[in-house]
Image 1 (cartoon, rainbow, N blue to C red):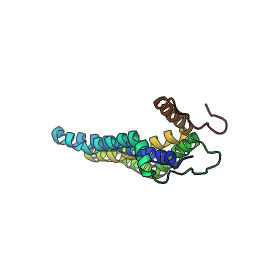
Image 2 (tube, rainbow, N blue to C red; image 1 turned 90 degrees about the vertical axis):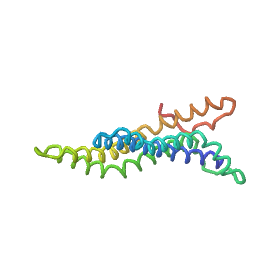
Image 3 (cartoon, one colour; image 1 turned 60 degrees about the vertical axis):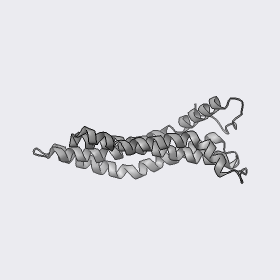
Image 4 (cartoon, rainbow, N blue to C red; image 1 turned 45 degrees about the horizontal axis):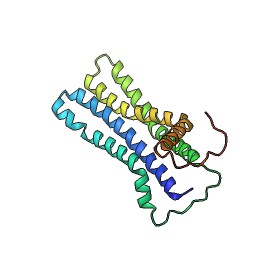
Length: 182
């Protein structure tokens, strides 16, 4: 497999991570704006989330061009045995999903406990409950995205390959090794 293909997979892996972070940031800002109640300043607060989303989108689209640029002098063939591009994408989704789950499971449980503790208090401060929801939603979105990536890795990999084949119909993709989980 050419090194440029591996670089494309890695770049797109980071683009997915950035996209999940932009979703998390968007929900976190929405919770903060709801607590503050100041919309003009609140809209400006969405700027980092939008910028992160745009960067993720551009990284996804420009991954092939960046890959060619990075590997232009040494785009050698990396011998990875019978590993196909689909297998590489599948590994990337499993890795990203596992990473998301592992870094978010403990904070999600912690903030979930805190949120229910604050919410169940009879005289619990409303602002603290909103703040805890803000922190909870950030970790919960990452956890859910990780579970989806982990459990749907093969299907996501196959969808990415179909998208690539539609964009480049006259180029052949490497065949997949092994049985398909379709």
